Length: 125
View 1: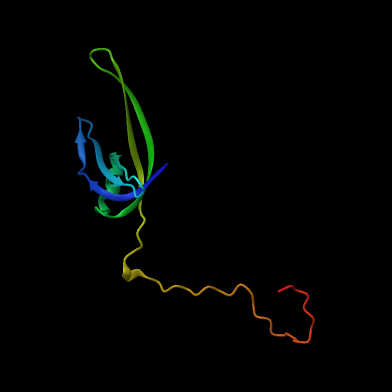
View 2: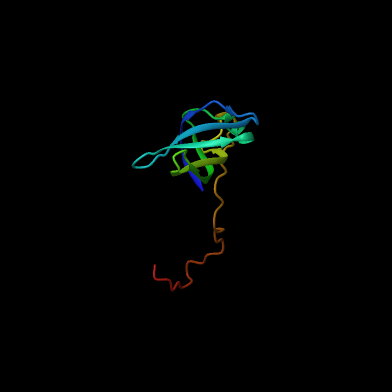
């Protein structure tokens, strides 16, 4: 699955526990009639994917939905969802210095060179 939008916030990398679990969050605002602010988390080595992005950039993020179950001390079962990113790419054109001039489109057909105006044409137009 994917989510597209403009970066609203990029958090700092956070480290948890003795095993060094790392997490970094990004918020993307979708560009639709009712914009949504979607929190996506990148974990472990994927946190570094966000280093080259800035607030305001348009991006496409490949995501996985994750869900987990937790039983609190009172014995109640709770469910939590998270959106986990695993790839991010810019939707904006590259910097102007790297522009390659556009190539004009090729003609679909070569012009006919052996036309004889006296030949009868049965086409209705």
